[in-house]
Length: 295
Image (cartoon, rainbow, N blue to C red):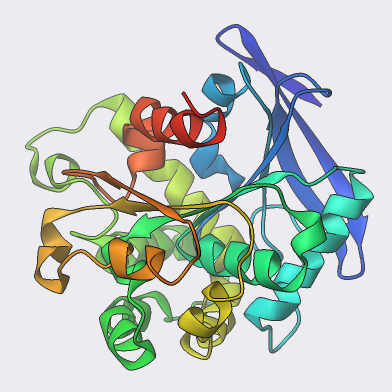
């Protein structure tokens, strides 16, 4: 299936791996350098819908739905980051991609790091992106930073014939990400634009599709030893830190992570928001192009 966004067509498809089918959206010439984009927990490939047309000028940009999210097959009951990385390697083989570049946001940066460390022949360059909390090296500190957010995200709800669970999902999602994912102007404005509401609806829909997978995926993140893994990365790498005011108290962690990866580069997107992929796609794409195209 193909849907046109501005002057660029975004194509949607599935690839079969051991878990089942992985859904993806792609834009760009099939013979262009491939770039795989992975989303954060609780989201889907939809978070890259504004970036894909921009990336299509230089890449075959492929945004995937991680197992358990979007329209992909459900993940295993007790997933690990390493297992998800091997699933990504299967996807790369299924799509017959040669050493694609990998962009991982938040949870996606853990999977990208594991893929680069464990399956070096499957990757080109690697970009580990995220807000400061997702780049913290110390596992205990990182997990403590994530815990309050995760506790809000874990409530379950029963599907109801009258659709009332949809309103509950909206309220749970809004409470879970208030001040974290949602920009302050959306939360505090007296009136909200149709465009902002449409953006919010996409995020709630993502939550509805993936709510059963959020808790097990975060348990996998809590158990993931990021420093041990990134030390084994041999690929050319960029740590892209999304610097938000809410997380300034952590200090800037991206440089510390960068220093563990031989030859890695560090960029910061200042005054960022958690939704930078959707609200500031031009700046994120510029950072990607600057690194991958060496411009």
